[in-house]
Amino acid sequence: MAYYEHKDLEAFGKGELGEMDPELWNKFMSYYGDVFAEGALTTREKNLIALAVAHAVHCPYCIEAYTDASLGSGCSREQLMEAVHVASSITGGAVLAHATQMKKLVDQLEF
Image 1: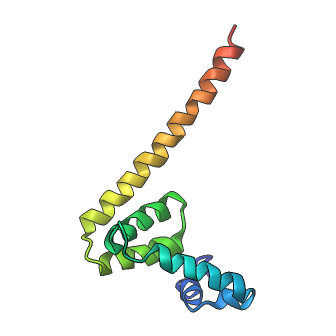
Image 2 (image 1 turned 90 degrees about the vertical axis):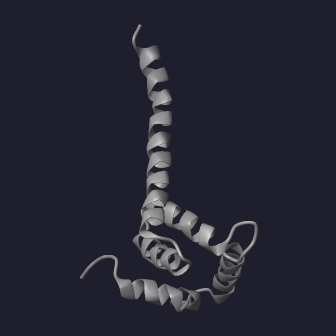
């Protein structure tokens, strides 16, 4: 059995987690719906952002959901891959930026 299974994503979409705490689930789903509604950003733009974030936080369920949503909102393969590269550059850059902490410590420890 695979740890991440497509049927688990389907269960999430059906609200099965809401059975455990319907009030909080409904609040989350309301917020989630509001966030993805058309606004200053289009649904298409929001889907691409979500796809990039999904990769950055390593969520296979979100990657699946927002790959589908991005394609469904008119994005091309190239646009999806470019969004993933943006996420990669930001996460990679963050790792390198945190190296400043290591450098400060090395500078202190090397007399």
